[in-house]
Image (cartoon, rainbow over all chains, first blue to last red):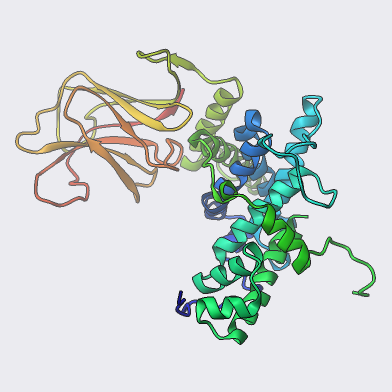
Length: 190
Length: 213
């Protein structure tokens, strides 16, 4: 497999997205842009964590985020991650309002027991998984594939270089920057 | 930054590798929120914007006459109230499908370039997935060899969406995602010559303005 370099590979994690900035600035377009861009991510998290109240929670998240937009600092992380942080709190609130516990023993779809070795709650884990897939989708094609091979397929840097015909130095740099991107998403939502 | 105190959880490569291993194919899938979610957010946004605008106006001691935007916000507030109260539930004709009516407009030829004796009622109705404009005309205005096209237009007439051609006295036309009666309060039927030009001809024959119901 050969991956061509992406001409738009300006993967600087500190570049501030224009939608994020417009949201922070408080324009109606900022709100609409944020919803257009992140509505499905937020609703997916709600629908998988609390299916009965998903639409209400999604609505609450965007309104709460809008009211608190001055507390959003685009330089500390992407808007998607900040919204996910708010969403987790709203989901926990919704369960508490019903006098229920956030499910802990099983994964959100109930199909398998949580198998992560750490003690993070399934809600955090679900949110983190969605954030990783979201962050991956923001990477240009070549780094995205290289990061996927490194973290999902557990290939070594050398194996990735062989498989993709991308120079080893580029593989390492893509992984380093890809990891920085994923970490930025994960930490901003924690 | 001391390097000793971690203010935020830090994810290292191993954490992310472990997380990546737990990711399943459906973690890449996304579920779009139903259109009502955005309608409700927008309605609340309008209310909050209007109240801050009103505060500013009071402070400036300006005219008490509400702006078009404020009027729309008032409509939006009414719309929100409808949402809060659970909405007006209409019983659909088939299989008891629930439809919520958000807004309605009476359409006439008043002040329009093309006169007609016909009138129409337009309603914005939503189910869980989609909002539509339902039009009910007393009859089809005479359009000769041209078509009748249904539009929704924003308040200052700078932006519009075509919803489709009106070929019968009753019809339902889906609203594109994100297009609401709050932002596009004018409902319009125009006579469109079959000249291949997609833009509005300017030959409106019926028009109304949505009020929240």
